[in-house]
Image 1: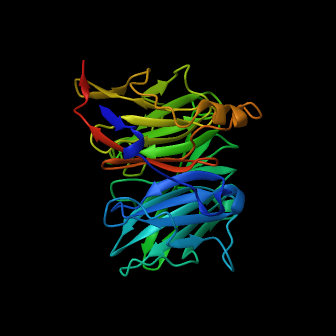
Image 2: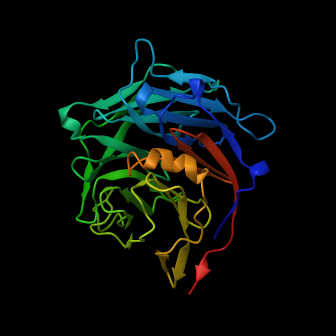
Image 3: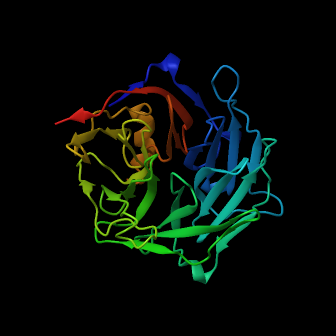
Length: 330
């Protein structure tokens, strides 16, 4: 079960450049030494480096999306290890994914090494992106307009290449305008934030035998979190050790933590949050939320070891310390 230290002196907060960036998605690099933030309204992705004291520098070490390699409303970001370096995927609402590469020297190229785009991709108003663990040789993208999740296979590591046509398309009535998605570290579980239904759907990866050796989730969810405190869920993240589920609410002044529950060999999630930390002073939240019920709350979320990071257009970035305990047994 997750425990979050929300004391002011233990939380790192910082605004993004110019304090005018509409942050939507956030992700830790595999080693946790870089934090990426996607800012939709300014078409940029900012990279922040972790300093020796464990906190992140507040000035970006790199900016992606400017010059000759523009981005179009980047909404989410995802990292994956790849050979001796790393990949960074940036999903754009126009229906495209830009993939950047970090070489062994630790430097990211400012231009994408590959793009998933075009009519063959079947991307429609794409909001969330994630690599599929543990091999990270597939990329999943959720589509708001069609309420589906598209999976793309990596066909080459050098040079980086992905299939342009999805090798698997997840469709189900439980999905409604999915805004964000996340996989457990083992890749067995897939969670989707349903903006349209105020729910979270959780799917299990099918065995290779049943799926005939292909990647597949479903066909239906193993659980649906239908908690009345969910307000336009935006992003989701599993904790690495216990698979507790963190869900942000773009229409509420808190994010929720749903503990995992072991039932024999089955894993399920509580329908009630164990934690709902308040993100900002309520008067500040109301100033935004009173104008738009879908805004004002936390948006992107990412978890890495003992850190939980969220982002929001008004607060920028907040990073909490956390620790995990053994899952609840019933």
